[in-house]
Image 1: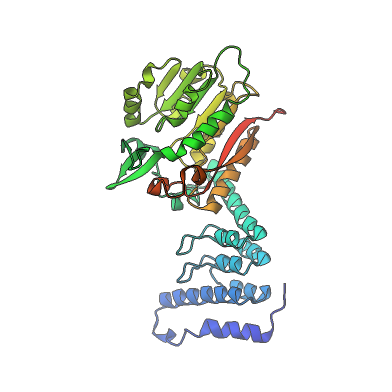
Image 2: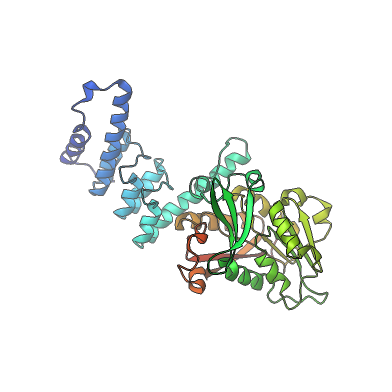
Length: 397
């Protein structure tokens, strides 16, 4: 650390004191709030002015709140990212800075580092996010914490907080002005996209990679899909050169089930529909009595990462063998590049712990359809690149 000279510390002290002239008129509580504001502002100003780390530490030790945000929504971490000071970012995170705070424009400190093409600073923020999520899940698993993910519950406004809320909602199947199939959910007078036609390229590529290079003399692959939606991925499975010998679909929503009936899915050869949540079947003979699957896919609308991670735990026993493959709709946190990166890497870590190696393929969802073609129907996935996961059992496990 650098040594702070008297002039620097004096200037900082003057700044922290300059708004205290009316202090005598304030109550004790007001004085406390005013002091917090002064310290928070002084910390952000000192960072933006490039003050030495020792001077920054003085303000932190004086009680400056690391969570403070100014009128623009900037936190000390935003300021450190803007001046591209990786060492200072590390200090702030170690002192308790909040990695996923967003400013008034919806940007995190990681977004600022990303916009400046500063890889070390960006990784500092992203890795802090991964550690925070892993810690939350560890505490939750041990019964020492009751709470939600730091990311999704505060940023993903397109999803319901509970599966029960989703299952009691009303869905409507229709087409947009371009003739594209969409499924909309009615919520508080508004309609939210549940599944849209823009996902076709993603689903087509997912099926291609899940079923590529298969040598199955007994017929088509055995397929399990959790979550029907518009039936896009299931239609691609059915369109394989050799259709699935068994195609199991788990779907709980009554409106989706009615749509499946109207589209003739209950009469398709080899198709078995399990009406309910995947949790209802994951330990039952209705599913496990069917034997292992060659391809497993899951895409549920209303579940968060904790639920997805619980599904991950069952994947090894769902797969038929080493050549079997697993994928999922990788859309959590996809309204922000940093959050999306955190959840992508979290899923890779958790699947690796289960003996599942993941390969990723970037799919440019804007290139095929055009950035503006889908309008608001793509609000739940704001990224240009979709990171498509394909998991297989690690040969050493």
